[in-house]
Image (cartoon, rainbow, N blue to C red; front, side):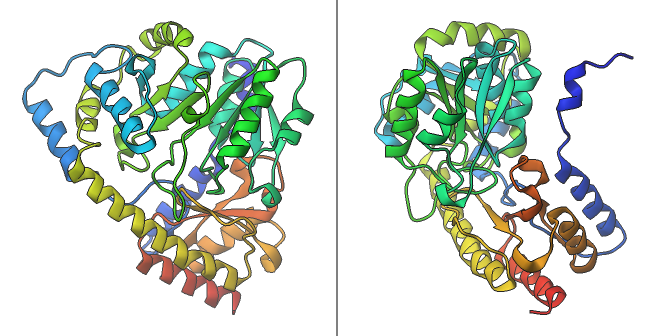
Length: 385
């Protein structure tokens, strides 16, 4: 069978191999502390489950509009008005099969063969793989702790070529949890716009910020494409539901793609998500945000005491991207040692790009403080600290 040549450049999620190893060790009776998974351990909030059950019980589970339920698009617009004070026309909102579906639709409408797109390195691997899938060329912008692992105007200018069509960034970011402030984001938008490009901003970790509130890029301009999700803050990972906010001129093109690729998002998931914005759900979600902050505030100093360096503190999401310091020379080898000898699973930097991945590891605080404390204790014993 002749597999497409592009597949040689689309890498697997290396963390999945680590997860498989963790599962195998657990099957042997080993206790594993999971800090590798970017998925909250909280169950779906009960009001969301109740809404889904009521809808399914009615039996009318059919296709919806390709752009999503009109009432859900209106609810999302209401969320922007309430949370950010921004008026967004529901007609610009597209409900998608997860934030991954949003990214695929946005890039599918924008990327032509040979087009270059700038992405941060380290960064979420699917971003570069989607650009390559569409026969575009992902161009890495190396970022580090000196810029909070976020791009700058200077870095974007240096990376821009005649073939560059846009910039994709995330705030808060995976794997670093760092954010980009509104003045710098505004400067980046101007830089991209002046060059005739498009700015896509991934806001899927909005709501999970600590000590500061995130500002949506939609406060800056209507021609910025914004991606968001019901997975992270709203705790609906397995429901596979996200959304996309587009400039009005792009809606029809994205609608055509959505019709062909997905037909429509999951009807039960959409009806469930109508309850995601209720006051009862918000109370649950804000309590969980406080718990995530407590976890971060436990794990961050704990890692530093062990010898890990964290020069750019995470302000959001649920990740800490740590330099392994003097604990080893290769994060992949260190990850293997942690899981084998200490029963702690964490993600080596290999998944997130080519910018010093051997020096970095991502720790996810998606388990309770009791397990985080146990994980730190195990590592303390392993490193004899």
